Amino acid sequence: MGPAPSYGRLRTMRQPNRPKAGPFRVAVAQIHPKKADYPANLAQIGEVIAQAAKLDPPADIVVFPETVATGYFLEGGVYEQAVPAEQFFKDLQEQTVQRGLTRAVDVVAGFYELADGIAYNAALYAQLDPDGGRIVHRHRKFFLPTYGVFDEGRFVRRGSRFEAFQTRFLPSAVLICEDIWHSISATLVALHGAQAIFCIAASPGRGFAGDQIGNQARYRQLLVSVAEEHSVFIFQSSLVGFEGGKGLIGGSMIVSPFGEVIAEAPTAQDAILVCDCHPDDVEVARANSPLLADLRGALGDVVEEMDRLKEEE
Image 1 (cartoon, rainbow, N blue to C red):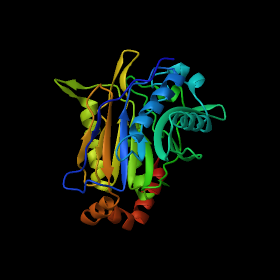
Image 2: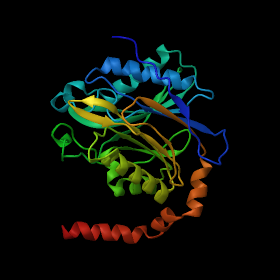
Image 3: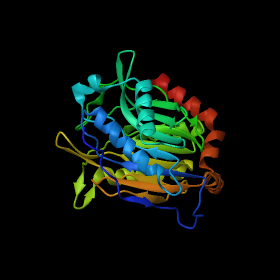
């Protein structure tokens, strides 16, 4: 195994007109994993975490894309590359300890999970710590795309829950790629209490019109809309590189609870975005635009409508 690549384009992008120092710092890593090479990709992940830990101040959370442990388009090879969540966590912890981690860092990373003989497209939110970390949350992709170049439903089983969970910084949730294309997903995790959504993706470019990539423009529209409607931070990390002739676009983004894109990565290039985040922004945004509170007030009637729809099937 060769040395992990260096990532020199660490850029701090802060929300305009906000204080420069924030309670926590997030690094969103947009990288190209080696297809079906779990050890090499672990080394690459460990190197990025080590770089993020050397920032001044260091990153508190590092976010990696969907299936960063193996690459996305494995198809029939998914099962042999899938690992239990506990093993993936242990391997992440070892990578950081080997690189001299001296403080706790939270990591969001996508992988193919093996559980009870079943493969899932999953993500871990883990707290890594030189004195022993822990798995904070695991999300299994709920909506599996089965159109165009996608055929996930043939190779993995979908998840069945949307949940929010508490971190050291903000109540949060994880969504994986197609999940966020369904507006109900973000609404559910926001109702569960999420104030930050980590959206990890592996999105091949499609819908080209001149210099514009259709799905990248759509992602931007989706993320801004979700952040603005629910007054949540969104940290989106997307794979780059080519897999089986399909070009993964990147274009990762950080969106504020006010619906402002405050950091955006280039297309088809490795990059890391760094942003200082302020939890009170969520409270201010929700006071200015109380749409989530309005929804909570009508939730009983909404649930009745959903039940009625189910009865009509």
